[in-house]
Image (cartoon, rainbow, N blue to C red; front, side, top):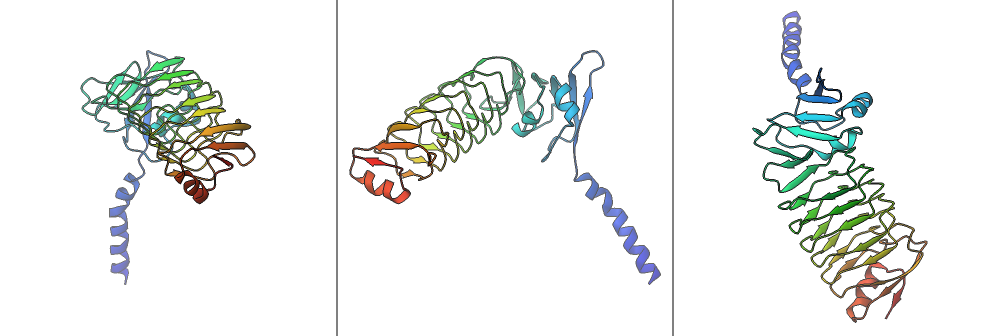
Length: 279
């Protein structure tokens, strides 16, 4: 019995380091010669919080490891004081342009520093996608211009951009994902581009939107997409191409009139319950 107990203890001790290694967190090492400059060391893949409250405020410039394969926008959202990113040119996976993180091929914009003070940003040519949380929490941006190649905006990409007033969307854009522009309180108007097909759940939830123009070609608008409580009484022209229009797209406290000219519109809206239907 005693021998068996010793064996069990040895087995536990053998596997304990493996269990400990699974909890992997980065370490931020300050540069002794430059205030606010930090180096990301240690673990490159983290699922939860990455920084203390103090680090989140004091890190101004963050140098990413050259072997980091992907950068999650959730990390960016946590770093409230961050103004720019840097990564070595030798990195095979990431690229920084003007302090903004992209995939190496520059097709996906991964992270725009949360405290970058620029008021207008033009998405570079070649970018096809905006990653989840990429701009989330930035309070300086007032205008974003999308290059013609952008095809999709992932969830929460611009969430809580409190100063964002204007978005110039491009015609190649086909999908605005869930919560992409939620809590953008200064965003008043939306003109959907010609290529847009899907507007996700709560895409503009509690933003400042009070005027929208939907595009021909739009197929699906998910629940609470325009739940802003800013429309009051408004008329919305629904394109004939729309196949799904969730009954909770707008706040029930508002008087929204849906204008629709095609006969099938009745059946589509009756299924999902438009607030008011006028033909």
